[in-house]
Length: 84
Image 1 (cartoon, rainbow, N blue to C red):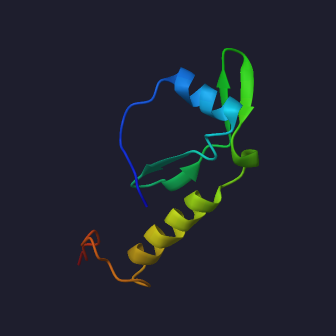
Image 2 (tube, rainbow, N blue to C red; image 1 turned 45 degrees about the vertical axis):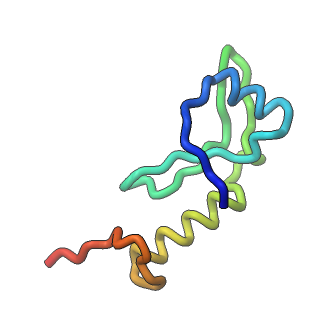
């Protein structure tokens, strides 16, 4: 999967929602794993993202990360460290 990491302006996000280019959105972190963003409110207007549900890509990434964390899949990145 081709990816890029860069800053986005809120105007670019809203434009993507309005023209259909932005299909889904999520936040990620150690405790959150992957948390979908179902709605963005900006300047008094609500923008629903992915029908307010977890998108296909978000679900796929979540499943992959959790499977690595629980040892159900190999850890090709050496992320998991056993403690104790």
